[in-house]
Length: 267
Image (cartoon, rainbow, N blue to C red; front, side, top):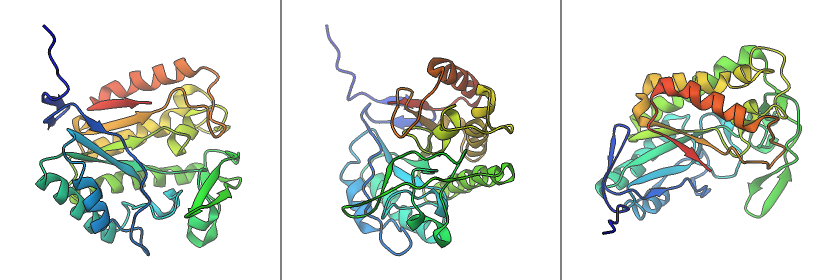
């Protein structure tokens, strides 16, 4: 006898889902400008999809420097937090659950998005050779980024922690850390994108340090049972590569065990 489990409930960490359908994060670029604000359009979009057991939002920048696409709703201002309340209320009224995806583009950005037109930041001053959509139908080459100073990395961790706090204020059910698709946290993991010689570069333990410190900071706001993380182990786009791909991710996942996360999202 076959049993269809897709529409049966699931306990995902500390979150009870009414079915096992999860809506993957999908960048929509529909924020209200200026301010990269979620608004009624975003609320309508997510409400329409609330029959899924869980929604994971579009990639949501944790800081002004984290933006990499036009009209991305952020999670680094009070006004953005108020806008996300419209979204979470709409989803919850429809009986759904929703996690916010915490995102930093790193070198996959453009000066057009950066405060004062500065260069995007990255582990090292190495170009992705990618393109950034700066306006509808307009792509610009991502520039060679500026390598973060060691003293600045604490700020990256604090931005993720503050974003996690704002996500809680906005009424989300949990958060997902974006460490995939060639963005900042994966840039640190890659020994082809990360040429640092400080404690955040070199060995796999050092390259994984930022990701683990971000996870610790986020899990201090949300219990790990309400935190997920997204990886793309097979990603070879935008000059992301790993000399030992399996060894890198095996190390990271072993280290993540201590946080008792709700899930790991692999693509």
